[in-house]
Amino acid sequence: MLYVQNLQKSFGEFKAVNGADLTIEKGQLVAVIGPNGAGKTTLFNLITGQLQPDAGKIVFNDENISKLPPYAVCRRGIARSFQIANIFPRLSVFRNVQVSVIAQQQLSSKLFRPAHRIAVAETTRILESVGLINRSLDVAGSLSHGDKRTLEIAIALGNEPELLILDEPTAGMSPDETTTTMALIQRLADEHGLTILFCEHDMEVVFNVAQSIMVMQQGRTIVQDTPEEVRKNSAVQDAYLGGA
Amino acid sequence: MFQDMLRQKSFGASAAIFMALLIAPLIIPKFYTYILAVIFVTALLAMSLNMVVGHGGLFQFHHAAFYGVGAYTAGLILVKTSWPWWIGFIAGPIGAAVTGLVIGLFCIRLNKLYFGMLQISLGSLIWAIAFRWYRLTGGDDGIHGIPMPEFISGLKSSYYFVLILVAVCLILMYLILKSPFGTTLQAIRDNPERCAAVGINVRRHQLMGIVVATFFAGVAGVLFITVEGSIFPDLLFWVLSLEVFIMCLLGGWFTFGGPILGAAMIVSLRTFVGTYTEYWTLILGVILILLIFFLPDGIMGYNYLAKLRRRSKRRSASRAE
Image 1 (cartoon, each protein chain N blue to C red):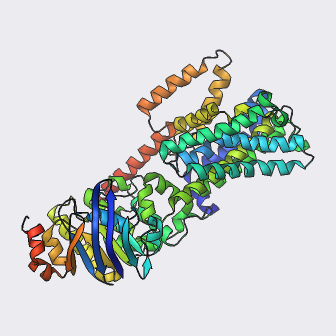
Image 2 (image 1 turned 90 degrees about the horizontal axis):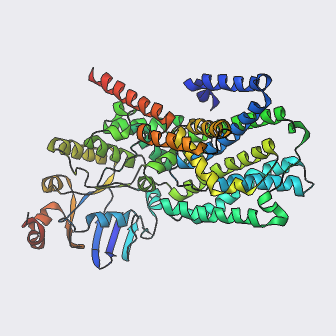
Image 3 (image 1 turned 180 degrees about the vertical axis):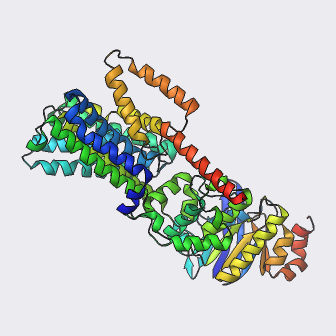
């Protein structure tokens, strides 16, 4: 479904991503791990078009998407969340999700239709499934950190993505919140048949949840395999797990 | 879509104000009727600016340029051609919107302040043309005594014409702000990066917002001639842009009606305090300083924030029960 080959991206002298490879099959839950500065977020930004790669290929459903701007990548069926909660703080929780549903239905240029009647059923369904429905009229900026992260996932769901990319979905969460969020992510994957790519610091979480793990170090892919194989891999143990 | 508007709480108040304004010219002296008409025109201009500044988050620094283009387009057609009047009245807003589109196409590539700076430069270019091209525009003298069609040549009739057109424009703007486009525009203001990531073509929507806003600025320009019967380069000078910007800040730029209040305040200050002293801007300065300290979101913005707070509090209270 998604196929990344020898991706490169430099910022000046610094090679943030330097030969990343990644393969994702439909329905898989794939994790990217690696020490801080390994290039995980840059890789995600390259896939979703926030950054343009210097070299390499990103193929999604047989189409090369490596040069597309973010909105076009999203239209192809890839939605994402960000590492730092990235929401619309002045809008209500409901509106936050509705905006992405409106964009998904390509109604965002309609000038003379009342927005509050559009996409209500879909938005409500998404808010119900992530458990934010009784906060729907609150201003999004007033939510707790954990709820903001959940709202981010809800916004991404509004795009009805085939592939959902989550950049450290549990960053800054308490252990309880982490458990709840990972359970939510797994449930969403099951219920909606979503393919999910995420990166995460918590090793326990990754090895419990992911079906395939890609390990990055200094911008390069060391290996991508099942959790068992990754655990056994000596290069990974040297590079990462040994140090942890 | 109109039913929703009728259900709004503020609708009753707005309708009452509109009725009062309909009766006003029958009671108040001519001079005040004229001032009211000027306030309507300025309010429409400020409202159109606020669409992109307050609701769109764009640094639209030279909005008066489009107001001027609207006024000059209509005025020149009325004076220099033998075409029927309505062609000029329609060409004004369209000319402003096309200018908005062209200038917008250049500016939209830049971010924030750079967007504003480039717009000031390009807008000043238009001002320079109006100022220098004596043959066509009358240079810094402008053109006075523009002939108006019979039915709006008197003060009262032009007052009603302006009142009704401004009311129609405000209703349209309201509907646009409550539409999916308006919602998207406000989302872009809050977080353009996130918008791009949910599949919104940010620049296209911003450009569309500019075109809509400059169209309404053009309408205001046309209405200006209806009231004043003249055009002059000050209409597209950057100082006016700044003044209109201040109206939005003053009234409350995250609110719908704020700019109307701001426009009414500044026009009144200029007219009534301005007759006593040419330093009326001093008073404006003091008001602005007080505003920045005590009501950073504008006069009506205070109301808006309080409403948000009340709503959040009520919700958390009902959750706690």
